[in-house]
Length: 523
Ligand code: FAD
Ligand code: DLZ
Ligand code: SF4
Image 1 (cartoon, rainbow, N blue to C red):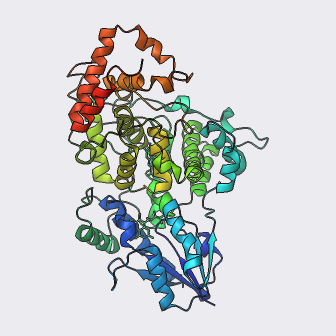
Image 2 (image 1 turned 60 degrees about the vertical axis):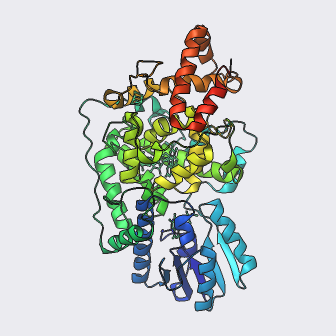
């Protein structure tokens, strides 16, 4: 009896359902570096190097533990092209009775796995991925019949299900479900978070870096600094340092941004969690233990746990609930091409330039940079969701479609028409000014509302609100804003429209035409 167990690049967990109960004596583990996965979008160079290096380390560890691993390198004899092609070739090398695989994270890849039963002569078993807390069926059951899929209610259900931060009599620890109000501190003067451990590339990683430089040299991003954890041991060290040094202030400064400071109090654990090197529940239990021992405050611990069993699980459920339609969603009919500066960082907007710089150098930007700077600009300017989705999938080392797409289409662009967010996350420059020091370094004046020196987010905000008035005004959470707009004189409104048109015109010739068409639209 021989069972072939393909392990995909984001399934690097010893506790993976398809590995957990397998018998090493009758198992061949197949791991594949394939061109289709490395090029279906032109991933950031660090992202490819990270995935390949983590895969190679994981394969070596399995080998040391006595597993038979058939590892296909990208440049192996015939060049590896696709998962299906490589499974077909592996079936020629091994006398296989059954293929046993854990379901894929991405819809696109899952379609491939589901074809295998018809394509191959042996039995094919696809196991649910129980590294996530909430199954597809459970999310569907929760979501069915709800107009707004409010994350907070989903999160409370996950708290009850796991018992995390729950008292013995079923109450939320700390007396509340949510401590968000305490977690919106602007960056304090002299904030100086301890630097996370940086993992020097070893020989395996260096080989992957050389491979990526040689084969994917034209992809976005820098490989000058590569310090991601590539093994479970390193990922645990990264987690230890976060819990010991940064969890305490994680909550209060979760939304803060500082020029040139790419980490602040964030965990930077998403790459390791998404690869499978860290188990989300083990992290949450550790955070809770620190609260129970009085070593970390409730607002930080609850905030961290909410990101993981709340947002991360919710986003994954949302993805599978709305796929494949989510990819095409464009409720706000946004059609502007993605501006060049998302790639180059060459813009006078200091906030955008710094976020793109971090993205290019680290294949990472923290949540509020992704949401309220880069995402907010894309929303206000009306950039085509498909182009924004591709960009986010390319540039972040933690990006897999199941997590990237709902965050982009639904959270930042409102392209789902409001199933995820009750209102668009639209904000003028004032928000960025409150939560960062960017505006002090910017050529634009955040207090100026219109005209050539004005912060571009200011006129774009009103242009956005004006052009989507029909859709947004009935929404109680945002509709009142129109009273402010209506109090402005027609001349003032025109100044906003003209200033927004000038910003958009400068982006691309296509946007110029589009911006003119919108003038006088809305109210
Ligand atoms: P921390 O701030 O330390 O948070 C802890 C953990 O919570 C993260 O590691 C992550 O696992 C989880 N988490 C927090 N917010 C989210 C969220 N909205 N969705 C899912 N998990 C969350 N995260 C990804 O892992 N991959 C992506 O491709 C991705 N794309 C995003 C795109 C946009 C437009 C936005 C607004 C957010 C995106 N996120 C994505 C979520 C979030 O920005 C990152 O998880 C976070 O910045 C990773 O850094 P960290 O580990 O330091 O997170
Ligand atoms: C993102 C990625 C890349 C760049 N390369 C590979 C690869 O060569 N082999 C592999 O097994 N997985 C890779 N991945 C991850 C997959 O594209 C995909 O995101 C996951 O399998 C989730 O379905
Ligand atoms: Fe960004 Fe506007 Fe502030 Fe400049 S002034 S940093 S563009 S928010």
